[in-house]
Image (cartoon, rainbow, N blue to C red):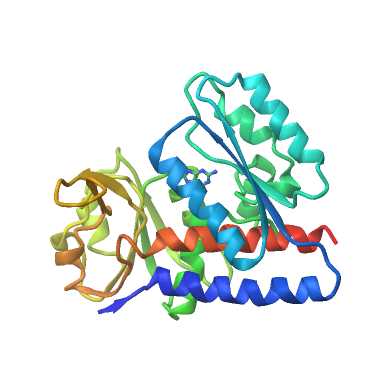
Length: 291
Ligand code: GUN
């Protein structure tokens, strides 16, 4: 079994970005600048956004964090977005999800200038991704592609079973892996809550991408020997033995599934760290496009 080490791979990517940023600056180019808007006090969201800001500092980017209260109106949020859209120093920005219920998420994502949409969530960028045109690929699917690439996991002609059809992971990774691209050319089956005979499908899979948010859903008896498993799930389970009061659990029963797998991502330390590295990569791309 080979561990797909997202923590190490993300560190390698950040190192590559650091060198590229140094070179840009040495050549008189502006410093890449990422902004993030966060609404409310969701603990996990704050942790993620802080990690994104910290990662910017590490690679030599500038960053701006805009914190808005849970009660902010949709109009005020749209106004903040409008300001970032026309600020020439900001190369890219994100609005951390989820948003409070009184705010229309779709409306917010559509307000972001597609050229600054380093999350790749704007319909224009989703459309370009679906057509295999150059664009910002969103961080989680982009991170999965990069991890498979750097560990030379063969995808061409393989049967990939994706668990989950979310706009952030399941849907885009299904599209990307079926496309004619370096990490792609796979036969993809996308499964969801209405899928019948799920186990029959997962048992046929060469590669399984689990992104449903149900802790330890994928068990050893659901996979064939030498499968590759990418675990996107990350659920906080209460655990009084931990200082934080919780432990992180993926969608895969790692202990038992890893015994049958050829390649597998751990949780934490798999896909999670890759998403931040890919967000930085998209921001660097946005900055270079701006020159
Ligand atoms: N919430 C969970 N994942 C993401 C992400 O990739 N981007 C944003 N903006 N919010 C998220």
